[in-house]
Image (cartoon, rainbow over all chains, first blue to last red; front, side, top):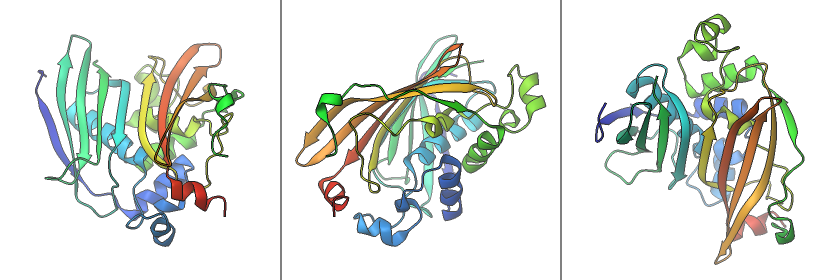
Length: 128
Length: 148
């Protein structure tokens, strides 16, 4: 691994089933994540993906598919810039911003390819 | 009232969470995680853990919402930012984590409130597990909808 290395794009689509599973697993029953009508009442285009599900999916793909096994998150921060909807074709990317023997800092993003990322952030990973 | 400014920074009463295997398993499945350390006790132990390991962002399920001085509307609150720092002592099933939270800062711009909430989880008797910071956004419409 070197500074400037890119990981991904890792492609994925979030399904409504995943939203329901995530709502249950995280005990987050905000109706904007499962009820289109309720979501529209709040000015949204329809149900949207939980920010924390997006955050978790980025971590999953970067750690499982991009980094060496045994890597561990030490710090992770994201900004939720725009809504993500179920059914959208999404891509996750990561780029190594800094590196020493024990830690890597990566800039990460999730969004529709070719558009401004919906989620952007940074993670510091303890390498094995 | 959304925020009682004089109570900003006051920590919530600590709550102890007992982390369960089933909760870790459901959370890991919801993210589609494939690493056996989240599901299989024996494999987690071979990797040096006490029990199945919570995925890092699992800590969101432990965060306190009953925070002094903060009265969030029941629906429509937007999540603007989230940050976590984790200690090396990963959270595993069977752990007891004591969690407390507080409003760190509030900005109001044109009727929109941007609320920074921080929280901390301690392994009971063993030191820090995580520090978290969430930024929540409450728009004017959402604030007023909750009053009707």
